[in-house]
Length: 154
Image 1 (cartoon, rainbow, N blue to C red):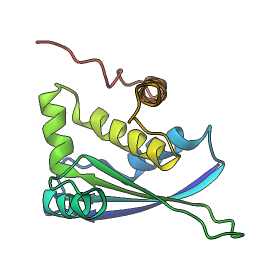
Image 2 (cartoon, rainbow, N blue to C red):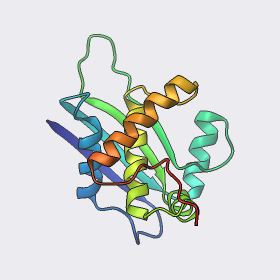
Image 3 (cartoon, rainbow, N blue to C red):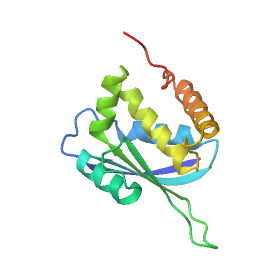
């Protein structure tokens, strides 16, 4: 299995970001049952870029945790490009705090969540959401992390 990661940092504050090794591991464990080879770009951005892209491509004028841009191969061309993930550092950090989750686990969840979107999974309809969430939970737990949808009340 070969997963190629192109990692880009476009954020002023690089503290508390996951390592390239961790991101590559999360991608590999997310994709291994679906594809033997893939190339993914992960770009970690600040709120301003996230908001601009979210507005341009989804008509939502606010930053978001993860945007997924699947690559659509031209007809009769076999390429291993899976797509791009754009992840907003501040939103991921805020969500981890709000949901009382370890930051590293929330980063892992965002990579897994985005990877599944690149593979065509979605959560618009309830049955799609249930399928996608169950995959996310299974992948997270296989890595030794908690169920990302279980919120502890403190």
